[in-house]
Image (cartoon, rainbow, N blue to C red; front, side):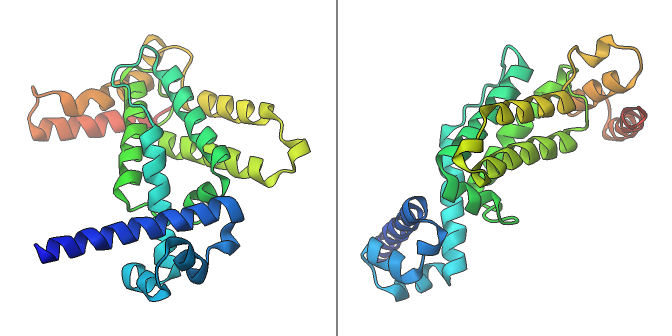
Length: 236
């Protein structure tokens, strides 16, 4: 029982420190997030931070994880959207809106390579994005491979937010965000389902997306068909 109580106290202290660091980041900027300032804001001694997080970099990783969890809580995953393209557009808008509303936190999360990307919240968020992309592929509306689509969506949203935040207020034109979103939509999706178009690539991509869900073929047959479909998808 004592061990359980100690773990609970430790977790409460950890959460209080992370929230204090996130608050300093939001209101005073990155330079304000020092171990001394965070300790004072959280009402703990500085050694507590080192004991719980190892060092300042470990604390920043935890703040990034907190950011991914906050972002994840705002996401809505619709397993059967009426229009998968509009679902993608709405998801992109939500990501950008989060970044604009939380500039310091967003810069920490996405301005540094791989900060916090091993967290469960980041992986859950990626699962939602990959689900959106998979539904596009299954509907024949995906123009590129699923992995490339994920990279394009991430890159444009991240670039849109970081570019916007780098601009002076009088140069922040909402048309920039709209143009970047629509450029992403054009690069990733097709106006009409590819299975209605001439050529095998779109149909192969749609079938490739649904292949793991079928049970008729043996594992060997499924693997072989997957290789053929990958070859047809690449031949465009």
